[in-house]
Every structure is written in structure tokens, then in C-alpha cells.
Image 1 (cartoon, rainbow over the protein chains, first blue to last red):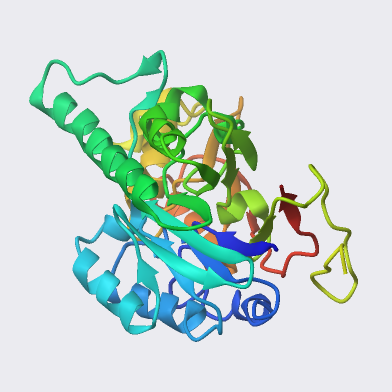
Image 2: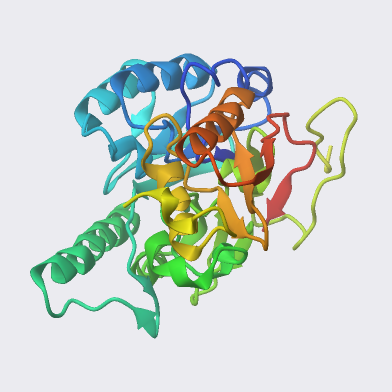
Length: 258
Length: 90
């Protein structure tokens, strides 16, 4: 059996964007078991912008699971933003997880915004000024909770959802100098601490789609400017042929094995 | 700090930095994905945004804040069509 995951990040909604994604989103039922949103749902993280997200991504007929991104924190209205999203039926994860029963099995999703710090050998350390220690500690605390949540999920298939990147692979295309602001190896280490099937993230608009953690977990950057479509769809399943990608269908999303 | 430091000549590195921060920190723009490339006689703004309104606003705000700087822009609006392919992950 196959678990079908749709995902997009960095949609940055406000009034001027409402309606642009909806026609594609309405095709989701029948094609995906869940829609994952990889943070930066809004431009400034206001309650009004969250209402735009609720209008665009609410009532889709598939469960919507999201983490917040740095933009969603800009106006310090995180509780209000979460309230609006939850009112619209979405699940907002931050160091938490959930298990969905799908026709392909029990899908466990652990999510967290994540934070920066950089990647192995070129990362910030918890040393020196209090501001520096706080920066690194923020990431390590988030990563520890993400790892614990992943390991505790009672499910058949585990997926990790973050805004910040867990590996540098999917940052290819971004300036090297800003990698420490785009993600942290600590997130990758957390993902590798459990039997994770797929890690989804956003944030890196100029990055690239595909990578793997040092432990071999597939990583996908679904930032909207990277995927250049309303969402991507991934099929997870043991019986699928490695590397096979479906063919394009003129009538929309095609299912290659049918 | 003002943008007049470039004195009508080619845009300097500080102006480039100032525009880059403006693109993120100006609440009317709030874009982190726009690249500012310094060429010999102009600054080039490249990237993608979620609506035509946002592209127009970037041009308006930058031109208003730095009226003496020749700008070239190549900013697209990201497509939102449904995918035509599925990635299979065994």
C-alpha cells in the first residue's frame, strides 16, 4: 500500500494571494492522504494573514498539517495565528506529532519550525556571549524535541516536517555564507535518530529539491519558489520501484501504476 | 545612513546591503528571496514572488528610497498549477 503526501512551504499568504492556490488544492482529494505545509504560511504572521491561510487551505477534504516558519513569527501573534489555523481544522505542530490512519497504513508526522546554526564542521557552537549560546541552544532544544517526538510515534511510516533545513544538500543554489541561517545539522541528527521515511522542509527559496541526511533519509525542500507548482506529491511505499517517477498526464495528476 | 553615499556613480556595496535589508525589513515588502546583483552601472533585482502586486511594490519602494540608482528587475510570479508528476519514494 502507498501513503500519498502532498506538500508545499513558503506560500506567504495575504489578501493578494488568496485564490491562486485554490484550484490546484481542490484536486487533492483522491490524490493525497494529507497536505503538509512547511511553514511561512504568511508574510508577517498576523491574525489577518492567518485568516487568508484558513480560507485558502481550509476545508480541502484532506487533513492539513503544518509547522510555522520565521515569517509567521514576525508580528509576535503566534498564539492568534495558531488559533485561526486550528479553527479552520488544521493541525499545527511544534515539537509535537500526530498519527493519521490512511489506506496505506498509519502515517506518523512529527513537526517543528526548527532554527539555524549551520552544518557539521561549519556550525555555530554554544560558546561565548549569552546571545550566541541562546542562538545555538534554541536550535538544540527544538531538535531534541523533534527527535523525541519522532521516536515516540506509534505508526508504520514516519515523516518529519520542519521549516528550516536539516541538511545542506537542499540549500544548493543559496549563497554559502547564509547556510547557518537556513538550517542546522542538529535537525538532521534528530531525523536520523528515528526510522524516518521522509523529511520535508521549506525556507530556502533559492535552494534545490532533493537531498539525504547522513543516515540516508530522503529530504525534500518544498519551498514554493523551488517546486514552482502549488504542491508536490510523494508516494511512500515498500513495493514501489526505486527512483521511478510518474509520467505527466494532460488531465492533471496521473497515477503511473494504475 | 543614507543612500546618497554613492554620489551618482555606480552603486556601491553599502547601497547594495541597504537595498537587500529594505527588501526584507520593509513591511510592505518582507521578501527574503530577492537577490540584489551589483553590475557596473545598475543594480539587478532577481527572484520570484507570490503576486504581481508584490513585484510592483518592490519596484515602487526601491525606486522611491533610492531615486538615483538605475534598476534592472527580473522578478517573476511563481506558478500555482497542480503537479503533473508524482515522485515515488520506495
